[in-house]
Length: 123
Image 1 (cartoon, rainbow, N blue to C red):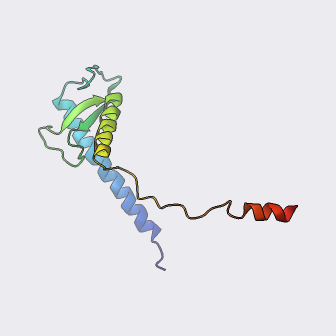
Image 2 (cartoon, rainbow, N blue to C red):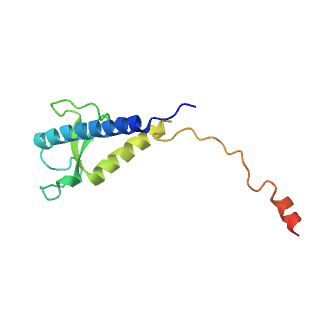
Image 3 (spheres, helix red, strand yellow):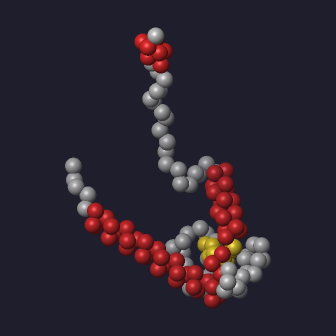
């Protein structure tokens, strides 16, 4: 069995986190400059005091699709953003697509298979 290089794994994970963070800050900053600080769904207005509650939603749900003109972004409050992703997940499920779930294997072990035998031995 091949030994896992934990240092290399740590570097790869750290780089992935840094890249995601850099990518995220880049489009968020641009979107906040392009659009008024208002939720695109509920029309709640935001200020510097609560700006952390305003998120950038990718209209086509592809976080790597970040055109400079912002055509794939809309600003949504945390609640409307969560609702939008829930609606998208439900829409996919209606077409037989389930996100975030790996194939589950059927259980084959029955912990109570010999329960009667074990109880009979004690009496």
